[in-house]
Amino acid sequence: MSVNADVPAKTLSELVAYAKANPGKLHNGAGVASPPHIAWGLFTLATGTTIVFVPYRGMAQAMTDLVAGQIQMMIDGIGSLLPHIRDGKVRALAVTGKTRSADLPDIPTMIESGYPDYVLSFWTGILAPAGTPADIVDKLNGAVVAGLRSAETKQNLAKFSVEPHITTPQEFGAFLAAEARKWADIVKRTNIRVE
Image (cartoon, rainbow, N blue to C red):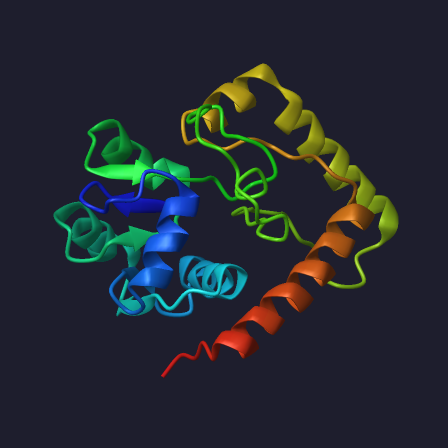
């Protein structure tokens, strides 16, 4: 959760108070129907704020406009925001994962900021076709887990602010099902559509 440096809010609670006092004044940008777009929807639902969504074809132009002050806020991955945060052009107010980021250890989570249901992390997984035999899935999972646990992989992922979260195939399947239900509900409640 980040804002342009000119936004007066220094904390998430200040941002929410500012947004409530100035409905429609803040503009959040993201690619249409992208995870950051849906993250905006969840934020407005969780905080009860009216923040204008500005659609972009992609995140690059939205980032340019955030830095320039054309839009006031953005919810995106730390990796893309970090250079602008370090340059002082963008201010991070909260991280959306369950724990603080090693890249921004002084920035609280949304949970710590009073929004226990606002947990959002960008993730990547490896899938196999439905019906793949369990022994093959287990063998593939073992190879992937071994790779993710290697020091070299951890070091390379850290360069992109990526932290591996290792699960079993069953845990990942349950996670996917829960994510599908959660985000489908948010998309419906915020009327997010691709037109």
